[in-house]
Image (cartoon, rainbow, N blue to C red):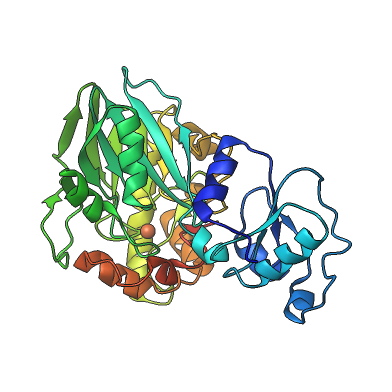
Length: 368
Ligand SMILES: [Fe+2]
C-alpha cells in the first residue's frame, strides 16, 4: 500500500509546529543543494535503489511521532517509508519529493511601524523566493508573487483585505512570476518596471509612481544592475523591498553570464544602485527578494537594516572598479532554465505542464 503525504499537508504540519520527523534519503550532494528545514538525513540512497530490504534498520528515529521520507521525486522515499512502516513506525512518503516541495511556503510577520498597516513576508522555502503582502484598512498590495495565487488570496481574505495592487521588482529569471495571474484573478492593478519585451498590458512604474493604501505609501527607487529595469520599492520611508539588488548578507548579481561586456556594465550600475541604497537612513528595514538557504518554519522574518549592511558587507566598501571585478569573478552560473523562465515571464504565459519542471533547483541570485 502506498502511504504518501501531500506537500500541502507536510507544509501545514511544519507551519503549525506539529511534531514530525522529515527524513531525507537523497544523496548527500543533492541534500546540500536544497533541503527541507529541520529535516534529518539517512545516507541510504544506494541501498534503497538496490532494494536492500533493511536499508533503514539502524536509522534512529524518535518514537511516537510520524516520519515523512523525502527523495528527489517521491520514488525511493516510498521504499523508505515502507521499510519504516515494517518497523512499526507511522511513516509516509512525501508525494512528488523535493520537486513538489518547490512550491512549499511559510509566512512571517515583519515587525515594523506602519501606522496601523501590516506587512507579511511569504517565503517560498522550497526555492528561496521571498514575496510580500502589505495591507492597511481593507486593501493590500503584493510584491514579487512567487507561490500559488490561492496563498495570497487566502492571506488577504483572512485579514479582510482586497488585493488592489500587484507589483514585481524586476523581470525574474529564476522563477515564474505569479504577479500577472494574481492581478487577473483578483482584479488588482498590475504594476511592473517597464521592459520593452513585455507582451501584455500593465502599468509601468516610474520614479514618480506613488501608491497609497490607507496609511501605506509606496514609492519607487530606480536600482538598475541585477537587470536594467530593476527597481526597489520603499514603503512609508521605513522599509525597502530590494528585489535582487541587495540581500540580507550579499549584493545581487547581474542576471547574465559573467563573461560578457554587458555583465560588466550592469555590475557597474549595480554598484551605483547599492551605494545609493546604503545612503538611506540606517534604521531602514531591508527586505530582499531571495534567501540563499531554505527558510525555516520559525515565523522569523528575514530582514536586515541599511545600517547593519553598511557594517557587514565588505564588498560595498570597495571602489567601483574593484567591486565590478569581484562581482564578475564570483558570479555564480545563471539559474537553470533562466532564458526560458525570462521568456515566459515576458510573454505572461504559464507553461502548460507543471511550472516545477522549469523552476527546479536552488536560486543563485547573490554574490557572496
Ligand atoms: Fe532576479
